[in-house]
Image 1: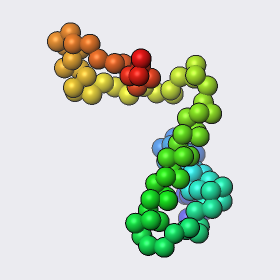
Image 2 (image 1 turned 60 degrees about the vertical axis):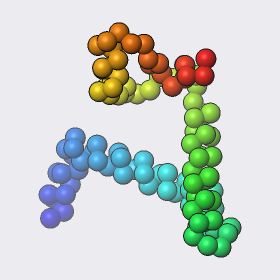
Image 3 (image 1 turned 120 degrees about the vertical axis):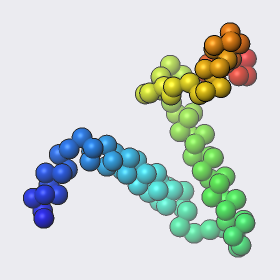
Image 4 (image 1 turned 180 degrees about the horizontal axis):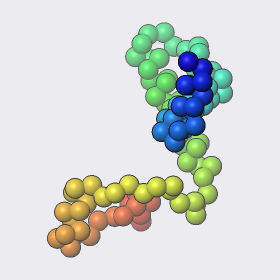
Length: 102
């Protein structure tokens, strides 16, 4: 059993799945220890949910602000069907969310 598991850990599929798991566990650890999410400030599920959502938004803003402006995304998503339709008909659309405000 142990030999089979050790050989399975060497496959690219296993390492890809583990990388996702590692990222999720790191995020959960950051919330639990870095932002005191084990205890809730408020009573009641709606208020507790609001606290969790606002904390998640704050963490996302913090992560985005720590990235450099010139840092490119690791993998660009393929265009959606709607974006492909716009391209086929020559209709301009914003290629990046960064250009929406300008």
